[in-house]
Image 1 (cartoon, rainbow, N blue to C red):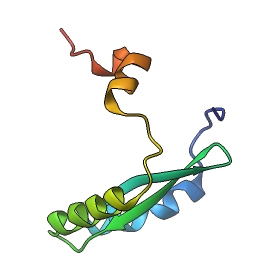
Image 2: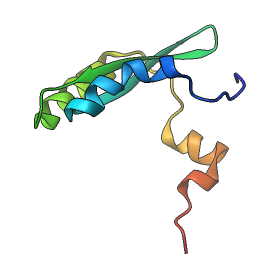
Image 3: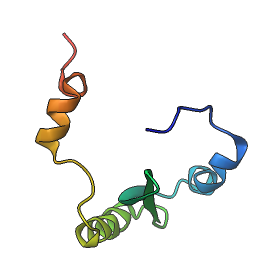
Length: 85
């Protein structure tokens, strides 16, 4: 697993346009390369959340299964699934 690092200015180049315009954006993990995640970012027009989500769902459905199933993830990181008291 790569070491954690602080976000840099260049990291925001991929999200800032969508944040400034209020356009919906979805990031879908699709694979890994060299141990690092590879993802596709889907953005829709203003008030077109359903379009961005539908496109992301199509990308996700066509991507090879490289992520752990939810049950395996729950076994590895049970704290992610605990509800606060």
